[in-house]
Length: 145
Image (cartoon, rainbow, N blue to C red; front, side, top):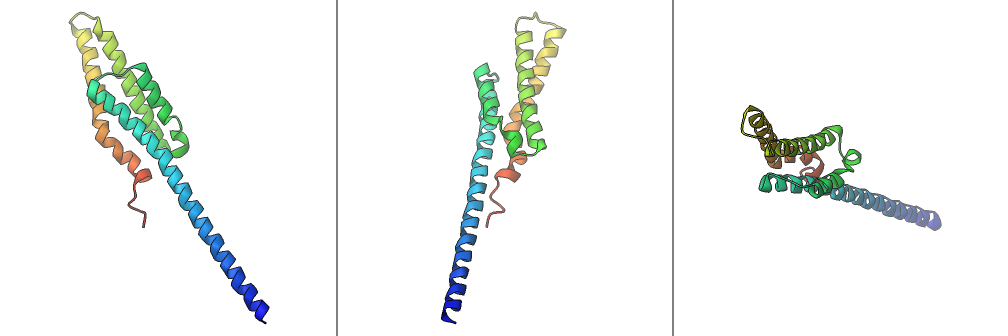
């Protein structure tokens, strides 16, 4: 009888330790996932900050943004992945318009490129604050108790 009771207590203790290990592993996974997602958020924020500060970017900065966000499709839903693609496209379009109008004489064609560049630049600078809305469901601690 004593050995049956001791076996039961030992089994319960082992089950409790296993449950605690499962909880720790689950929390560790959530922390690792947060870290990887935050790196993508931070790469986007840094790229947009460069554009806001300089109204330009170079190839190395674009590559750094692309490299920093390349894992997004594995960590976020399609809405965030599409958003990051839109940031990249708008930035490249902005730079293309800048390069096209740079050597153009003043006129309607140049004005059209200047306006298009301005529209993309405005959208990109607005994203510095707007991007938080798309990332917050993945990075917020409001649901952690």
